[in-house]
Image 1: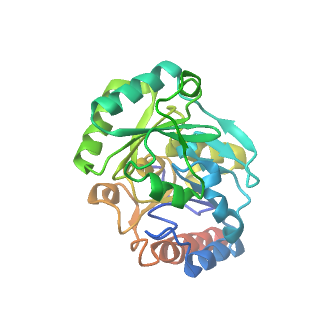
Image 2: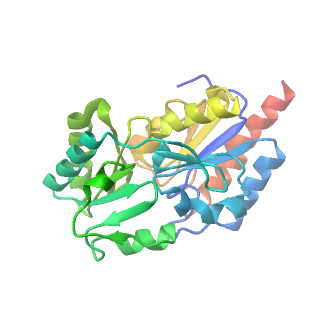
Length: 278
């Protein structure tokens, strides 16, 4: 991990971090975002969600920096115009889909402009539609044309041990051909190797002219540790696993107890003040 120093940008995960379990952006979180802006610290968000599944956060947070959807698979402006996108290699996409099915997980497919499921009544479909505020396209099977332009394939199961085991197998089998990491205990996200949150830190650093050492990161899941490794200071949520917490510079309270707002107050703003006084 890079030596910590004054913070100029906070990159935050969304689900399990910025919003509550019921996907609520609290008033305290909004006020924390405002305090960052007043302190001269930029706020950016990244998520496994598609970009338009984060659109409801743009105005309340007054976001004006790039937004990284699909764990960095698609980078957009706040008006959702695309800056960069990374699709899976078609052969790797088919390999990942077969592996997920063989491991007994349901599979979802995302293209740059659609979310496709085979069974609308499968676990978490309704919840995901409520979260991202748009419905999935239902197809009995995934079309070859869609597999050729997949930006994310998701393995879904309420058997959390099975999802964890599938993550390890996908990492082994796909190797450098894809990034495979859990975005929720019940979701395994498979994306282009450059579509991971560590690469999001590097991309924002390049685009905004901010050294990675001046970027703080905040999250709760194993896929968030990829950005912990790159940024200068990392914060794990109180609802994160012990494994995730062990890889962070600091730990805040849970997303049900204003962990985001408390982290901004306790860890980020003091580093802004440190930077202003040096």
